[in-house]
Image (cartoon, rainbow, N blue to C red):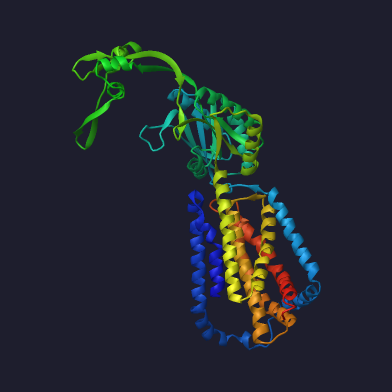
Length: 583
C-alpha cells in the first residue's frame, strides 16, 4: 500500500515542474491530490483496522458462507471469459495493440488548446476608436455599442468605462472603452449569440471591438500583453515599414477560418508640435538637453511644488504656465529658458519648433520597435489556427532583413506546459519502473506493469475525441492521473499473483485465475467509486467554475473504462504468457 502510494505521488511530479501561469494554476491541484492520497493512507493504516476490529464481527454478512449474490454473478461471468482468453493470448494481445494504435492515431486530429473556454456568465467588450477621437465622440460610440447589446434578449445589463485616469493601474486613453455585459442565455447557444453579436457590432464604423470575458481577458493580457488569444508581433527599425507589414499580416489573417476580433495596433499620423534641439546653440549658452527638457516639462506639464491643507482635505500646488502661454505655436516658441549664467532666453533660440505629422505612439519591446496584430479564435481550436497563421505568413510574406516576427498568446503556454508534462512524465515512468523492479526483484514484472499503462490511454483519448476533440492542459493532467490509477491496478494484480505462487504454492494458471477473481471486486469498486465522484464534474462541463475540472474528469472517466476492463483481461494474459517458462 505504501509503495503504491509513493508511485502515485511520483506520477504527479510533472505538475510541480510547470512554470509561469500554468504552474500557478495547476500546482495546487497536485498538492491537494497528494495530501488527499497521504491522508487516505494514514486512515487506512490506523483508523480502518480499529473500526474493522470492532464493527466487522457484528456484521451478519460475514457469518454467511460464500460471496454475496452480486459478487457471485460477476465472478461466474468473468471466470469463463478469463479461461478463454488465456487460451488465445495472441488474439487478445493483437486486439489490445490494435486499440492502442487506433487511439494513438486519433491524437493528430485532436485540437489543441491551453485552457478550455470559460463560461463566466459575463462578457467584456474592448471598444477602441481612431486615435484623436474626443471623449464626447467615444461616449456616443459607447452608447451605440450598449444599445446593440441591450437589444439582445440574452443581455441582462451593461456597464461601461470610457477612458481611465493617468494614475490608474490600467490607464487608458479616451479613445478606448470597456463594456461589462451580464448574460442569461435563453433560446440560442453561446456560440450563435456571439456570432450574431459580432456581426451587428461590425456595422459601427471606425471602431475595433474585441469580445472576451473578464477572467479570460486578464489571462490573455498576462500571457501576451494584449486582451486577445493570439498576437503576432512584428519587429523592425522603421515604423512605416512595420505598419505596412502589419497591414499585410492582417490581410492574410482575415482569410483564415476561426479568426475573429482581428485588429492591428492603431498607429496613425497625427498633427504634432515637434521641438528639435540645436545642440550647438545650447552649448553656447551652457545648456544641456536635460536642462531645456526640464524647463519645457515644468512649463507645459507642470510640477507639484507644495501642498496646502483645508480642513481634512489636501490640495497639490501645481506650477506651470497659464493657458494663454500654452495655446499655440508662437506661445511655445517664447517659452523662457533659464541659463546657468542667469540669463533668460526664449526657447526658439536653442530649438527649432514647428508643426509636423508623426505617429500617435511608438510601441517597443526590449527596446525594439514593434507593431502588433491580434485576434481571438471561435469555431476552431487554438493550435490549428496558430499553425495556419504561421504557415500563411511564412509562405506568402517576404520579411526584409532586420525585421522579424514572433508569435505570442495562450498557445505559447500550452506548448511549454505540454512539453514539460511529457518530459517529466517520461522521467517519472522511468523512476517508477526502477522502483517496481527493485520491489518485485523482477524486471519482467516491472515491464508488464509499464506495458499495461497504454490501456488506460485508449479510453481517455476516445473520451476527448467524443467530448469535442480539444486536448487542453487540464486534459493532460487527467492522463497523468490515469497513469497512477493504471499503475495501482497492475500492482494489485501482480502482487497477488506472486503471493499465490510463492506463499500458497499455486500453479501459474491457478494463480492467474484465482488472483484475478479475488482482485475483481476491489478493482471494480475502486473504478466505480471514482467514476461516481467524477460524473457530476464531467456532466456539467459548461457550468461556471467547472471548466477546468471537466476535461480532467472526462479523460479519467474514459480511461477508467478501458483501464479497468482491459486490465482484467490483458494483464492476466501477459502474466500467464511471459511467466510460463519460469513457473
